[in-house]
Length: 160
Ligand SMILES: CC(C)(COP(=O)(O)OP(=O)(O)OC[C@H]1O[C@@H](n2cnc3c(N)ncnc32)[C@H](O)[C@@H]1OP(=O)(O)O)[C@@H](O)C(=O)NCCC(=O)NCCS
Image 1: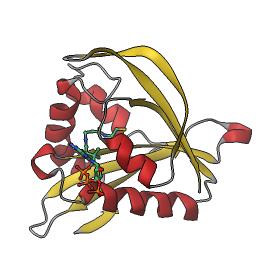
Image 2: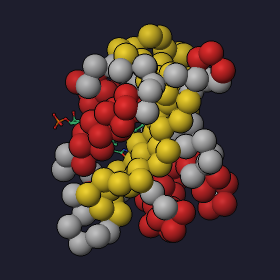
Image 3: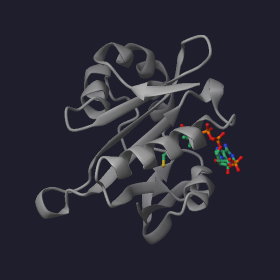
């Protein structure tokens, strides 16, 4: 596995799994039918530092972004997002990428990281807790899950 900064050309390889994950409607508070240009604007925004993971064949199997969660005097608190291609999920790539991103954010000068909206039913909650994130609070019923109905959105934080 190789983890590196993304180039604009990498988006073409990220989009298919980005679309698969967001259109499933289970994990991200973005429109399930987000069109490709809007998705690119969200993920590859100039303020984002985007990473990609290449497998042994050079295929891109995961991506993450880090950006300031707030501005001005609070710009040292990061926000991040993670997606592993579902065809490659459950093999440790997400944990590897998260550890990389946490270290990168620390060396970029961020002193904390916040996740604004983790669906409380997302199995990733276990991953974030194992990496030291704690839930600051939950917005009850904020997320309309396609099979579970209204579920909470957790706000997670950890120091870096
Ligand atoms: C969440 C995500 C990034 C995890 O990546 P991954 O490569 O599948 O995860 P890993 O194989 O590294 O597993 C890491 C941990 O996550 C947990 N986990 C992840 N997916 C899980 C699942 N479907 N069921 C149960 N546990 C799961 C496990 O606790 C696992 O622990 P371990 O390292 O002790 O085995 C990936 O599944 C994904 O992109 N999901 C869709 C988008 C998403 O939910 N992003 C995060 C939004 S908060």
